[in-house]
Length: 114
Image (cartoon, rainbow, N blue to C red; front, side, top):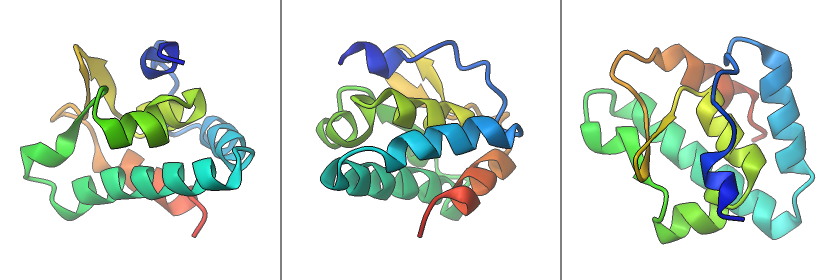
């Protein structure tokens, strides 16, 4: 659903493992193809920020990006995990504010299944 892209208020702190675990459990419950696509896309989005911390292009993704929308944006649990990693909805994009700690992203990546 299109509403999943907006997904909540984003106020849940990533330092609370139960929120991350809950989102990951919901992702694990997706169908095999959806789960694989979601995890691959989330891993790539989050991993690129960590690997290229000074490159602005890795700090945002358009909600209407076809691959994002198909793999992540249509699943509320995936959007919630992205928010828990520090991304916020800003207009038509999810953006990682420059003030955000990359530690949140590292924590989420470390909890994601292989």
